[in-house]
Amino acid sequence: MTIGLVFSDWILLAFGASESSLIYAQEYLNIILIGAIPNLVAYTLNCVIRSSGNPRLASIIMCTGCLMNIVLDGLFIFGFGMGIAGAATATVIAQFTTAIWGITYFLRGKSTLHFRTSSLRLKKAVLLPIVGIGQGAQPIIGFNYGAKQYKRVSHTLKLVIISTSILLVSIYALIQFIPATLVSPYCGDNAALVTLAADGLRKYTMLFPLIGTCITGIGFMQAIGKAKKAMVLSLLRQVVFLIPMLLILPRFLALDGVWFAQPAADGITFFITAFVLYREVKSFSKLPVHHETKIIDPGFSES
Image (cartoon, rainbow, N blue to C red):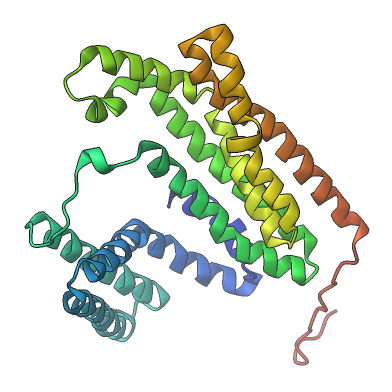
């Protein structure tokens, strides 16, 4: 959400917004992003409710949100004269409503499924937004690559790398400052285990901010049709380099070798991925570029 607000102009232009429509798109985006997290929560919980044996309630929640959105659209756009901002506000309110409904259902214990802290996976929870950003950019990159708009492809790639890096640096800082707080829910009341895990987490995430480029590189290659390169890059970090590091480093560093194996694999994978991306983007200059034709309004006369 923060990334969307900060880089809204870049994102909208990458999606093909024109100078005349940019102001309206930005007005809509700045409001709709407020409901980004509630929307994800609502969608996820709705799927869980359906799969846990209550499809009727899942349908009711979804239909209620849609109907609320339609009614509020008319009220805000025509009744209050809010225009496109009213449409965005109506959507956000509907998203918040369905999210709260889903959360309430689970908090009341009516579901056969129950959330437990021990069921959470810290690494997956951290990397999920990074993967989401990369997957969200794939259609943009693929479309513009197919349209021979290579500047847009390069621009989108830079935006994704910057966005994921900023997010990972923020998470990295959090891990370095409060590692004990993060690992405590998984260690129970064992103080020695908390200390050991906190120290290990700091070492394990030494090069954490570099992971964004590694994950982005895989998605980028998939988006431009370079499946073989994408497959090779996907194997580097967790297979090609990590397994040898786990076999070699503990012989010299004992337990620390286990912690340092992942950052060592991350560092090597980062440099290889960065080199591959650099070569790929550089090759765009040799490809034929599609030049957009500027259409002039017949009623407009240039002096």
